[in-house]
Structures are given as C-alpha cells and as structure tokens.
Length: 225
Ligand SMILES: NC(=O)CC[C@H](N)C(=O)O
Image (cartoon, rainbow, N blue to C red):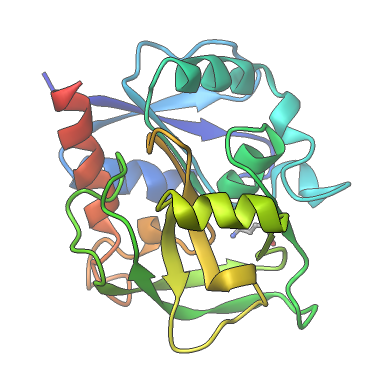
C-alpha cells in the first residue's frame, strides 16, 4: 500500500494540482484535504501548497491559519508528522506558529516569477534527506511576499541549530535575511520554503526535476517512523 500524503486546498490555492502530481510522481498517493474539514483522512504527511489563499488579504497566509484543517495540521505536526509548506504554504506555516519568523513584501516591492538557484544547506529534515549538503538546485520562484525576516535571536537559533534548509544562491531575489529560502522546525519534520519544488519534478514541464527530491525524501522518513 502506498504512502498517503495530504495536499491542502484553501480558497485561492493554485498549486495543489502540481503538488498532488509531485506526490504521485514520487510514488505516493495524494489525498485531497479541504480547508473546511477538520480531518486529515489518515494521511502520513501533509503538503500545504502555494497560491493566494483568501486573496492574500491582511497578509499572505494570515487568514488560512484559522481554517479548520490547520488545527489538525498543527496537532499532527506536534506529534511528529512531516509537513511541507511551499510558498503560500510556508507563509501559512509561519502564521500558524509551526515555523518561526515571517514572510514580508519583497525588497523590490515587485512580484517575482523566475527560475531560482538554491543551495541545500541541511539534509537532516524529513523533506531533504535525499539531497547532498551543498547541492545546488534550480526551481521556480513566484511570490510577492517572499522576504524572510526574523529576530536576531531567531536567526542565530536557526543558523546554530542547522535549521536553514535552503539558501538563495547566485543573488538574493527578495531581500530575505541571511539569504534564507527555506527553514525547518527544531525536530526537522516541518519544512517551509518560498520556491516551488512541485513545479520542478520533470524536465518536460519544469526547469529541472530537482524538486522531486523533497517528495522522495519524505517517503523515507515516513517508512522509518
Ligand atoms: N506562489 C505563491 O504561493 C505566492 C504566495 C503569495 N500569494 C505571494 O505572492 O507571496
């Protein structure tokens, strides 16, 4: 029986179809999770995908964190379930308190849409174990509120505990502090990143298939649990 991985849909989510496809390409079974249902349907990991949940009103991710499904995601994460937040999903995970810091307007105040090089800084997470530390990967970036900020103390903790998972390389596109593109929770089970690995799972449709490694990694972590 294949691993069941939930993919959350809020009003305004755009990237749930690609996230489900990435899950399927990795060999797992995607399970649709509706924002209004406080039910994770027996999944073993969750992806919170990108888009414009609730139209980015107030702040990107600020309303989505109150959706009934997010209460279940927070509880499951506390129990060690792997959770991946991509772009708007990363914003939602920060708003929900599963990851520290916040995503703010890009330094240039423009929405950016481009392919972006990242360095994998940590393989000690549920979502990056299949990579090599220092690997450079190319995946799409498309966001208006992608500038990662956090207090000096939080940044020092993230750096000191090896929880910066992805860093922008070849230029910082949005002014993120410490060039941070993605971070992990203290136990390495929850990861959020602004660029989109689910759009880079096959060379036919993405710039590379570099993003597939995240979806393959989580299968190892679920099997090992
Ligand atoms: N691609 C996305 O998920 C975009 C996230 C959010 N709407 C932003 O513009 O920052």
